Image (cartoon, rainbow, N blue to C red):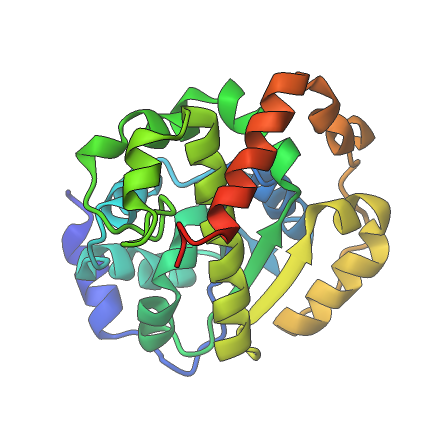
Length: 258
């Protein structure tokens, strides 16, 4: 709260022609932490918090997003403030900002978004192991609907409420996020770059070179050591869980979605 006047001033006096920020976005448990740590190795990029979410703003922005509220002037001002605080491009890992692309581009026309995709099985496995992310499915009745963040449409709301397990609700959220990535990438091709977790693991150097070109900054001279075992998380799912995921994907693509 003490910094809110600073955030307000930073927002009001921001330079709309300044490059950045760079936002790492996607669904929870898709590897956004990993991607943030990769890009943090770029010499002219800084996330300030060393590869983790902002302790001040992550949950504030996340809660606003799932509640379908616009970002406040103070939340936008936080980014304007941090752009002045760091040397080079400010990098942010608040993955729900995928749903705030339009508002952020209005405030920061030269912002860049690195939108990360990952296969549904690996994301689902990670979601069920992570209480902070899985709580959105468990507590879905607390949030307004329809709800893009949750994956609830007017057509599938009854199915979502009455037929799905929490694991399957996580699949709907994954699917909605993947479609949202495609949507904003098509609408804002100069500002949104789509990446695949699996490609980062298999082709780290070339992927980082592509990111460097996209954000117009020199590439890193060293790279994050990628944990190859993370590519095989789906192998830890049971046959029943895999079947639930397949059923949820079929429901998402059926008439329940509209």
